[in-house]
Length: 591
Image (cartoon, rainbow, N blue to C red):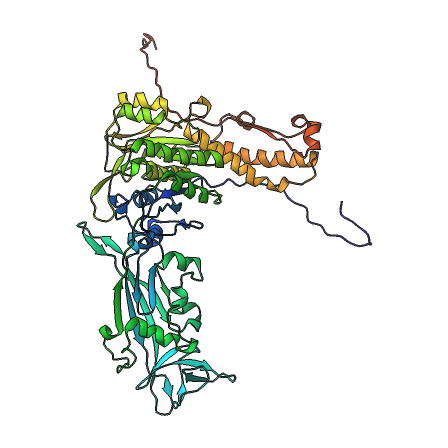
């Protein structure tokens, strides 16, 4: 108990009842090649397809190993959000090509090198630099409307840097100390605007450029703070957002200029040696103040392999809130033996989920399989932490509107998330519309599904009226206790929620008071689950039990610091087979 040593009044706060908050189950993670984006470090959380495009590029085809390849990760990301998903992590896999020096696009402007931020053909962007010229800032031999380290061009002379004296007054200098006389001078502040256009294809499928994306307007002197050109476009920018969204970087190490001439030398390197000696002013035509360049080279790397996916999955281990994992496009085989490559990557994703415990893999079969081939593919691996979907679906390409066949796992992951948000994770994510589907690669009938469903192959079916539906909700487990996907994911939810919601009990005194507190905490959580319909039973005690007392722990447990709480739940299983038994009866002859 607390110490009471001196007479007085002691006010103490006592902890109230502990509660458990249910964890999110709708956050997904995709691994696979993209057009651009970081190839290492912690992935960014995306909340829309626009976020994906901003960081990882659009859905234009990749050139993997020198072969055009459908951008399944981008299409999968769009499908995930279109189907109702709201939170997605993406880990880009990238395997360097045979000539890695050309993997990252770049070009040279005099002593300045402009590099793409990340490898990929999408790094061959078009960059437009515009030199902005402000109004004359000399009024009555005094500088106005400028700040220290602004670069200004003095008419008829050269570029100078604004510096500050100890008393706060400003002056122009080229060496940092010698002031320029402002008598009769005209000085115009200079800034640079940067716009970027990424390579893509147009609605006819022809090479094109995206609409210009403005990176911003920047100060020329590197001492200009967060809005200095060389700071925002640095190889290692000051903020993570800039590192993800600014697609180019400037290497100015070759200028070799002093601090007070670097801004002018940078403008000269970008726009040419005559730019500051011309009759510069606010009326200077835009073409004379603008330069557009296109970065050279840039490749999407070599064919992805299993180690690349395993490395990407290892990155996901540090992200706690992921509960759905998929590798969109891995089942395509990347131009090699589709079955072996697909199984290797599916196996890696499944193993990752088994290792992390609270995750489930959304898998798909290779394209073009018939019913027996799909069944053979499923039989290559059994796991309660994975669900397999068949066949591929046909969707509309977001760039040109053409029809393209895609593996369904990413789209189904969005349906999982949609069901979790709307109904709860205990609801089987089946009998749900595939919103993005225009058609299925193969339209299955009931007889074909009767071969696949008992083995854990979840089918996508077409029904006149409802349309394209997910018509299966099983794992690929051979253990009948875990054959239903909703049961596996619901237990993941229960276990992780209780895990995170009872961390307060660690290192508390392991006695009856703690046992009662833990029991009441878990009972309160499960009572809410029973009320929501996730647990069976007409009464709470029929839906669950929680025991945490002397009967659940031995003396050895107590001596070794173990608190043992035994929990049982009667989870509601999906009504997979709805059976109506109808018979004839004889109507009574009398009333």
